[in-house]
Figure 1: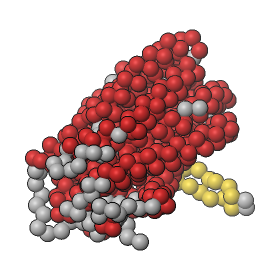
Figure 2 (figure 1 turned 90 degrees about the vertical axis):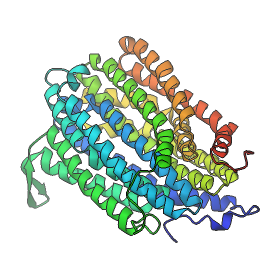
Figure 3 (figure 1 turned 30 degrees about the vertical axis):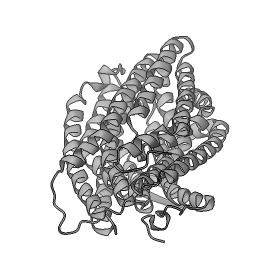
Figure 4 (figure 1 turned 60 degrees about the vertical axis):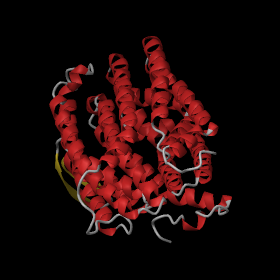
Length: 479
């Protein structure tokens, strides 16, 4: 079985995969991505538990700037999408040389964009925690954490770019394995950097462990070191080991106007969406901050714990992007529709089951994250509220991945913005002063359900396929 998808036997006018073959393809791409996402969440869970063991202030220091790190991460993903979706289309259409040209342009763009984001992050790191309303005893650690995070952004973007390109070529296994390695390295480095030197007793043996004792700053340094190592490995597999995308002689290192124009058309709506959605997350942080350190810490840890539930959805969404994108490139709109719907149904089924598990296991999950009983009780309570949104949250996640594969980024952007600002923040601002953190999470639950419904309507109506056909001259516009 090759790592890249072979569409040749389905390109004829009468050819079509059976339902079993479609499901096998969705699972083939989804399972490695799901494992990587679940591993990432598990490692973040361990990471949060490490910091949580230092106390509520340490947890709040990272949670305070979490919404801003999501903003910067979203701007990275937006740029990656602009190039990786093009690669999926080109590979599906059998245009390998053009795909290799897009790889080079994407890597150059990643270096430039990563450097700009890093400079911006370093510039705002000093005052950011105060702007977000952090307590005086939390702000110094929070500022140091974000400064280190910003310095690592060029490597974060290179890792994401290389991984996204490999995924859209059909190779889910390599980036998934390396992302699991990233999480493992993160835990190892954090263990060495967060805690001081100590002795761990294992039965009759006493094992001395080195440690730098850097606390919150050590968590940021550990993550940064893991990003550097993984980015270099991801670039190696993209540039030298990928059968389709590896660097070969004869393809120039230069920007092309058509490629950049297409990347901008795909990326700018996503970037705008991430800016405004992350802006909404920052506003949400300001809503939570006055509720106290316990609420900020519980909110941050609940977001981490919820990742176990929604990360499988993002794995299936990545598969949907690849399958729909390569079907579009092969000019098979019928396959695009089938893969989009099948992936979304699978995502909803998986996340519904995960929602039940999360509801039942919420108290136990928080016992691993923090020793503080007040944070445990509040965090488990709000996490159970969120469990009811998971089926429709899955619909939004996977459908968005499918639409992205077709190059449909503008309308989903508008849908997300209206839902976030019109439903979540309005409700949260009203409910938080009255019922505390539970009001913020109730607003989130309602908003995710609304978003899932409107994404399902968009997906099932099929207008995104008509738009995809119109963007490629000579394609049939019928669905």
